[in-house]
Each structure stands twice: as C-alpha cells, then as structure tokens.
Length: 367
Ligand SMILES: Nc1ncnc2c1ncn2[C@@H]1O[C@H](COP(=O)(O)OP(=O)(O)O)[C@@H](O)[C@H]1O
Ligand SMILES: [Mg+2]
Image 1 (cartoon, rainbow, N blue to C red):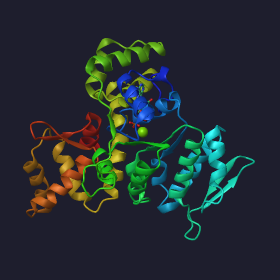
Image 2: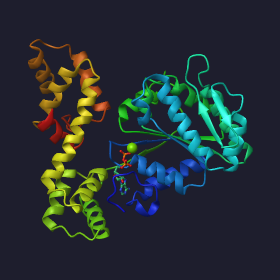
Image 3: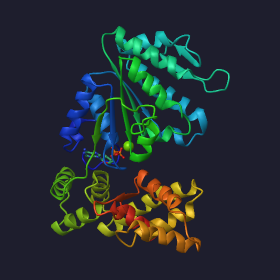
Image 4: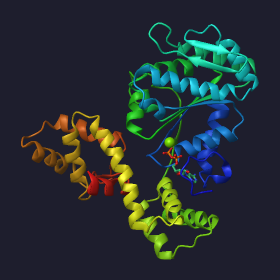
C-alpha cells in the first residue's frame, strides 16, 4: 500500500527510489559509513528499513526520536535495549554469538535462555557502549559477515550522547565488521553533530556514501497519487490531483498523507492541507519552546511567510520585533540555525524560503 502513514518496510510498498536503494546496497556491500539526509517526510526511514530488510546483512536499528522524550542517558539505554532485543530475537548466528559476547560487558545483563538483554543507565553501572560495539563487531566478523548499525534521526542524540560521533569514528577506523547507516532530517544539524565538514570534527575526512532523498517531480507525484488511489479503488478528479500536487510539493510523505486522508473521506485538498499544517505547526512550536531565542525565530519565520526573503529583510524583521539593531553575526547564527534545522532554505538567488509548502502554510496560519 502506497498510502500508509507508517514507514515502508518492503520493496513492493516503496515507490521508486531505485537509485537510492542501489546506493544503500552498495554501501552495505563495500562501504563503512552511509548518511541519508532529507527533510522530514521524504522517506528516509522507509528507505532505511526497506534496504535493511531486503539486504543480506544482519542489522541493529535504533530510532533516536524515541530517545528525545526521556531525558539523559536513560532514554538512550532504553532504546539500545529495545534495538538489541529486536536483533537478538532474530536468533541469527551473529545475534547468538553477540549475546554470548555481551556477558561481562558493564551495564548489560544477558539472559541467554529468553534470549534478551537489559541495559542499565545508572551512574554506577552505566552501559559501556564502546565495548558492546566491539563485541558486535567481533560477533559479525566471527560469523564471516558484517553488521549494519542503523541510527535513524541521529541528530536527536546530541544531548544524550555527545560522545557518539567519536565512537562512530572509532568504529569506522577500527571495527571492520560494522557498517554505519545514519539518517537525519535536520541535515545541517546532523552534519555539525557528526563533524563531517569541520577539520576538527569527529568524522572529518572519512569516506562516506551520501544518499540525499529528493522531492518527486510533478509527473512522479501525480503518478504516485494515481497508483495509490488505484490501489484503494478511489478515483478523484484530475483537478483534485493537480491541486494536491501543487500544495504538497513532491514530498512523498505529504502525498501519502493526502492520499490516505482523502481516500477515507476526511476532506478536500484544502482541509487536508490544513490538518497537515497543524501537525507542522506543532513541530515548529516544539522547536520554539525549547529555544531561548523563540521570539526572534518567530519573527524570522513570520517574515518568511510573505514570500522569498533576503537576508537583510529577515534581519529587519527581527530588529522591528526587538526595537533595536542586531549584530549581523548574531542574526546570522539564528538564520543559519533555521536552515540547518530544515525549516528554511537558501535559494540559488540568495533569497530564503520555507523548505516545504506545508511548513509555510503552518507558519502563516498557526505561528
Ligand atoms: N518510497 C516511498 N513509497 C511510498 N511511500 C513512501 C515512500 N517513502 C516514504 N513514504 C511514505 O511517506 C511517509 C513518510 O515516510 P518516512 O519514511 O517516515 O519519512 P522520513 O523518515 O523521511 O520522515 C510515510 O507515510 C511513508 O509510508
Ligand atoms: Mg523518519
């Protein structure tokens, strides 16, 4: 089913993305580090899960978004425990060996009978992630294979695991049984966190396969909708399809959301766009509520709702809000943060625009 709100896991549910799948398969076969980037809802998790399921390598899949709600190391330990237990439930040769090797690693209790692990996060017996990763490498190499460690939305681990990029660099340099697959929707934030572009950064200079998901073209978006609707045996008018493609902008997740909602009779294009915009507004509000500069960010975002905006006009909007002139360097930090988060984009002509139409609607109506 194309119109499904969950990430896809199987090839037959995945629309196209042939090249991206191939790139991931190549990376699993011969690479060490693959980074998948795209805005929210462009299909990263779907691509990651499908490639892992279709690929030949064993894998451990960790979803960093699940870590965010639970503060500190505890959330991370819980997600490690969940991911490792999912893996050991496969009872593959690598997972069986891994479980044996995990015995004696600090902060991990192993139950060989069930089989399962529990992971500790308390100060005294905090899980030793580095050693666990070494054991995973050993288990994979011992079985004559490699294992993919997938981290979805890895930038969400900045607070809980600031040491993570250094551990990943260590795995890249020394643990040849491990392939790292990392995704993120806050593209700039992820690159900064991993230290890919900075000569002093943790992963700087390592060769990485980069898979950047793209928007569907107008033709592809229409084709996606037509196929999805034919699966559920609904036939919207041509006008509805055109209008949907106009608003949802080639972002596959929004198209799937539209198709799902429309085929359930949940409204016309306008009201589904409005539901989508409310969700995006939540995302924006979440970001603002965690930020000390919320008022200024809001001024920038509001100004950008009026159409493509120059650097200085956005700066002017913040100054109008503050009533005083702002230091250009400080203003630029704020603006670049919004770009790195994937809210705004800088176009070729130097003007700033919302990265996604739904987001623009959200900011215009609900911010
Ligand atoms: N290639 C694809 N074919 C069909 N549906 C897709 C595809 N990629 C993503 N989707 C759908 O789009 C939505 C968002 O996908 P997801 O993988 O969660 O994106 P992301 O992880 O980038 O936020 C989901 O409803 C998913 O089913
Ligand atoms: Mg995702």
